[in-house]
Length: 286
Ligand code: AMP
Ligand code: FE
Ligand code: FE
Ligand code: ZN
Image 1 (spheres, helix red, strand yellow):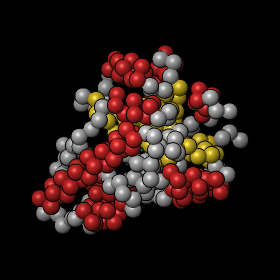
Image 2: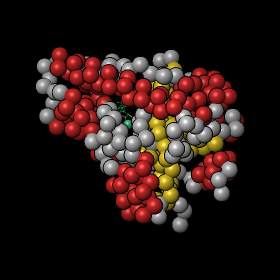
Image 3: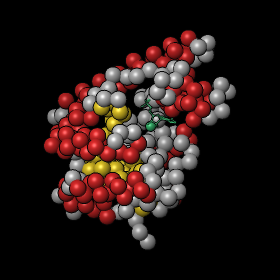
């Protein structure tokens, strides 16, 4: 049987609904051999995930996903194989802390906007839903659903939380260039996440890659729940053209994205395990 791998997963440490331990249990039940937990702006779930994975005989890769802004586009960057000991990497830890602070300020402004719309909501309400320290828009969405204001998380985004909607607030973002360098400096494998979700032209994507590769970008996430087979083929070719590695994962979040399953995405996702072997070979692992 082919190995099932999933290198893009969110836990309760950010905006997923399962704890790292629950993710490992689910991965084990689904016959997944390798997982990477890649929470937004935090490393908080990694220790728990790694311990649980050891017990279940699942290979665990320490990851993290960072949202950045490139002009008018949101660009997500993932670091894989984040080292355990970051004591000598204060620049990276400071950057993570600063991202969380910017997120916190943005969250306060979302609360104010929702309150301004007459909705009874406090930061405490949302924190309770978050489980971990990183509160994200999916938690706001869950709250709005729980109080019956909207019927689904999607509706909450469509009406309130998505870009330019009633309670949208941008946050001060770093550039993809900064994110790539931060991950590269700590020795992580640096992946451009779900490139097909960026609504930019092929030329713009190509141009961005030419800027990010010299800074340390290593791979393209060609396989992702939101990518069509056509997207996959295009990105595999683009990676080959730029001599980049490939990565892939479901972007599992649990109940805020119920249609996405661990390791299988929306149904048709198959992340080829050869890409993991290639990434390891490039890192000099056996
Ligand atoms: P944040 O990092 O707090 O701005 O929240 C971003 C997260 O919200 C993304 O990683 C997705 O998990 C989720 N998200 C963004 N847009 C939507 C949407 N339209 N519907 C559902 N979830 C979304
Ligand atoms: Fe998310
Ligand atoms: Fe993302
Ligand atoms: Zn993600």
